[in-house]
Length: 109
Image (cartoon, rainbow, N blue to C red):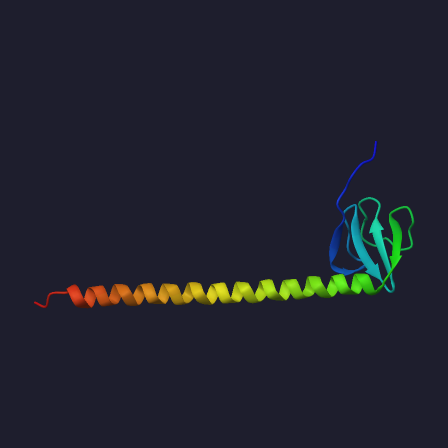
């Protein structure tokens, strides 16, 4: 019976010997892409075939996917900034309305 798993990209994707990685994590080192076979302890080398499996040479497809992912993150960040600005504007408008209500319905003594 086959076991299915969903690999995840390391963040950042560049291999860092000082970091530990969970099983099925994809990293890049130089011109190659690797996936971890199991949890990887910090200070393991990328050439340790007991924990890392070289799956491909870095290529145009991966570069395109990386560029697309980075563009999506930028768009999401921009949308978040826009939403936060709209929230602030709505809050300010609500405060203005409340101030107008108070000014219109206040009875001077």
